[in-house]
Length: 544
Image 1 (cartoon, rainbow, N blue to C red):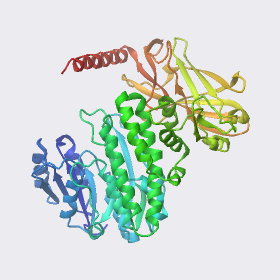
Image 2 (cartoon, helix red, strand yellow):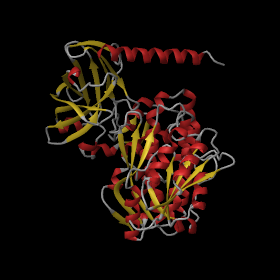
Image 3 (cartoon, rainbow, N blue to C red):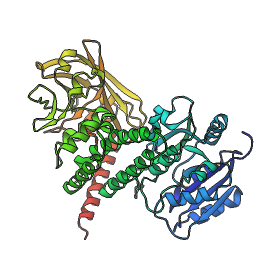
Image 4 (cartoon, helix red, strand yellow):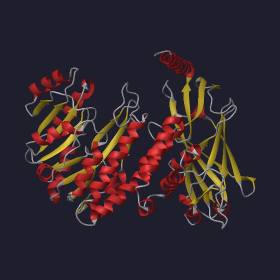
């Protein structure tokens, strides 16, 4: 790559623990980086000293220290846009890193295609586990030039600003900037402004950004802390502004992108927050329901029709009901893959409906939807014992579609949560429990035979593949059934480990998973952490 051509804008506030890693990852990109602009948003920790030391070692590092804290991420990034001296720029947060070769990959694609924007794959890395999940991988499966954003509406799904390289003049000429001050989800608005300006966008399959997700941090990032209703208010407001920007763009392309953005909101944001409702308090639920209902009322019918079926059903239930209802059932529909739990009522004319008292929420699409996409509901019970852990699965009928397909067998796979690697596979046959209503299958799992090299807790997700007599298949998960003797920790003897602590539990989406702690030390560690949490909770409840 000839010539230095890129300004990397690194923003940070009181993040001395991670700042050096971010800056060094940018400087390490090589000669393509003309400068790294570190914008310190008036930190009160050791950030200024760290940046001064790094700048003394590499003259490419420029430090901008704001006199007052902006309260958000938008203002310091705008400072970076104003200060950039190179023909291209990109953004980096102080707690993330650029992987080797990221700048070269993006710059080569931008130059090759004469593109104003180049975009690549972002990897979400969960810390401390190290588990990696690609962000919007469907967009980045192969190199591609998108001549106009409306030709690839799925681009609205990638609202990140950090996995992209921008031509500096393009941002300045079109006035593409971030919202100022404390504005959560500022990426939404910035990305909408970028798409509305109709750039040529080069897509590359290379990993160009590592997004560190620290859920166990003492203070969660602004976007990860969803416990307060203000977060949902901020998200819907940022989305509303984004849709307005796209809709008002010149030509018909903006309207197409605006519709795609609303469909994405229903399929992504609405489902994500719906999954969390059962864990929220009554007041939060009521406020969330009212805010969501008001916002969804601004959508056109075509906006909802463009959304995938699970989110569309959730939206229509919320629009039809003035108060929160059916939260446990909505939680399952919001899961991935979606599950529709019984009952399965019909209207007077036989049309499938959500509930007898909500006949306007019709589910007629379930009568024609392919079996591999049906929200088939499977309940799961895992009972640990010395002789092995017995997993019982109960498959429910769905408006006659399951019976017509003919339940045959189920493949059960345990997948390691952190690595994504399979640890155990078992197959069992379904037998009719209540003909035409439910079928059951049972497998015996020797959990002690799993790879438990660590002395700490490991988490295993249970994944299912349902096979039918008509040759079709459906990938699914099991809904964790609560009840006497279920979802509790059990210590079972193990020849290899002495003892094994087994805890079936329900994930936020209600899926059945299992935690394992091998050996006496592992069991003791779990007990100690549990006591610590209990004591911490007790102290917290005694405050003012």
